[in-house]
Picture 1 (cartoon, one colour):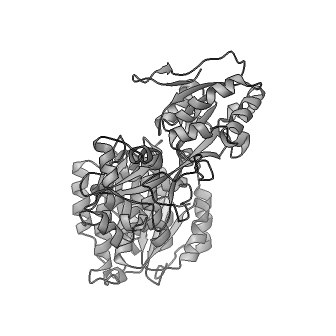
Picture 2 (cartoon, helix red, strand yellow; picture 1 turned 120 degrees about the vertical axis):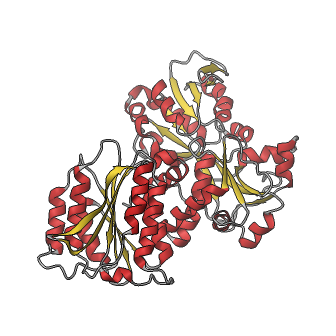
Picture 3 (cartoon, one colour; picture 1 turned 135 degrees about the vertical axis):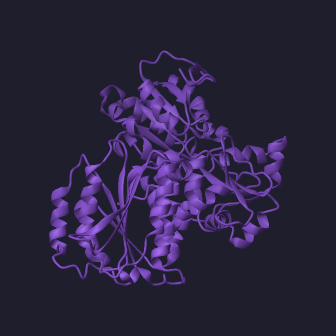
Length: 521
């Protein structure tokens, strides 16, 4: 029996039932369900008959449905959802056809006529949209909820990807963070209002353009639609069987039969009805939907898990929950101006630290160290802000503590501080809460008598690793002095990351990136 979610969240029959002994349970996106509805009678009637039991659920909620119903296959509206599949326990890529694209739907930028010229002037692409929305240009973006649909997840992800590819991952994190205040997130389709650019999928746009009536259709018919002058963005509907289904010999033939039907042309009628394209991007009817521009650019790749983290951590403050130890170099050179600025580097880091704290939710825990050679003999580091929950009182204490940050007449004392910070964070790991250390330095390990050597520090970190007490460690290096390659080698045992920055603006970007799930592997 083909089924869909009822209004109360239950399951209601919407299609024919059959007497097939072979049954396949599928959870799919609402925009793909018409394909299965159209195909179900054929599958139930042929000699290799298979009965489809289908539940319709979009976004992250589909994972819970997979578990609830013990479903055999998930067909979400994009492959990037595998990054958060977790409890669904999907099969490994290629097992049972896992990862096969069964349909696609391009995303377009739908600009209100008042702002369309500005997007055109900026270049008409995804990076151009990011530049407009991340500033006080007056242009706003409208997107679907990223947790509730591929339209939203891939749409927001495409904005971040365009900046990532052009300017790097830290700039991408900052672009998303600064775009959020100028973005309207909606549950339904992102039809733009005055002053907005909506991110919409072809499956939703095409029927409105093809003779649609009413206010919604009139709005998109008046709009200027862009396919992206730099890249194309595409939803990839993906066949994802579970590991249990692939391991069940009784499901081998049903899985093969249904996947074959979805990829060999049998599903074309359903794709046409759903306004979707075949996996290779061709249109079953052969005709480009009226009013939509041709796709001329290379599509973005599927969002990688870390990129998905960026989207969710930017949009939902609870996703940024983490315990953070910020470790700041206060050696003498930190008193000099940051390149491209007259502001002392120590002040730039102070401001970035405060901004990092504002991005974290109240149930995060936050602490600050400062370090320099023999700053607090016999140690090179001392506590500036004790660890505490980021409630209003602790945030006030953080502001007062950072006011006292200043460059000292001292060397760097880097290596002993790295080991001390790692062990300190490791000792207070809370189950279920990511633990981060972000250390900022503009110098090498120098003027520090009795310091660990690079080899000794690497070994000490390797000895300290505990899989049950994982700590994510990022070293932000500024200017020409730090030896990034040496630090990368030292941090290998703990999967640490070295992020070299060159300007004051990049300091802010990397701190925002850390807040937005910025663990780099």
